[in-house]
Length: 305
Image (cartoon, rainbow, N blue to C red):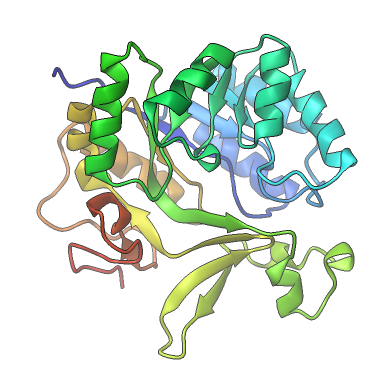
């Protein structure tokens, strides 16, 4: 199998930042070597600093800089108000939508609109991919816990069945693991969810949840639970290209993201130092899921200082 040309994509900001932080981040991202940028609030509907028009404005600027722009839908839909916002997002008329929930798939498919399937849709087999391809899916993200070997088999089986929609792998960042109707960050501050006072904005890279042994097991991000360590698959980019993966997703962080992007860009061109990953930010590294092991494992035995 001939290796594909691996693209880099910038995922949506999972954390709650200020309007100024979003503007500064995407102003810088316009010059980064990434092909696709996914925008929008995919975690919590109470985070309303940024409206759809704001995201569309940023998207237009990024598109003028040559980026492919995608708008992410909310992953957990909890109310009629969430559905109204979802309808507006799906009907934006400018950019493709990343469907992170089946209600988004239904809305987009009914309207005959193409979409990208997010990792939260849990696509594990060619039958599921075929159903969504008939509904208008133009690309999909592998579940974050899927191993390299399982993904290789899935890509091979899909190609044999004529399913050629490009696949994206979550290659860098705290892994999105779960969503809940409860807000754990608000609970940490002894506040009810509906009167949370947006305490999650105090944690631009999430709130670390440590074990009794002081290991960062999870990262709390409002109603979302992320991995405690930061997945880093930059050494696997050549393998991904050989497998036929189309894109490696980099999840935004508040600090050091420009350096992360530059280093991944070098890695996809074969310019990565060997044998150990270069530490770019102060975070533990994990890659266990990719190798079929517990997700928090660091198979290279190296953690950032």
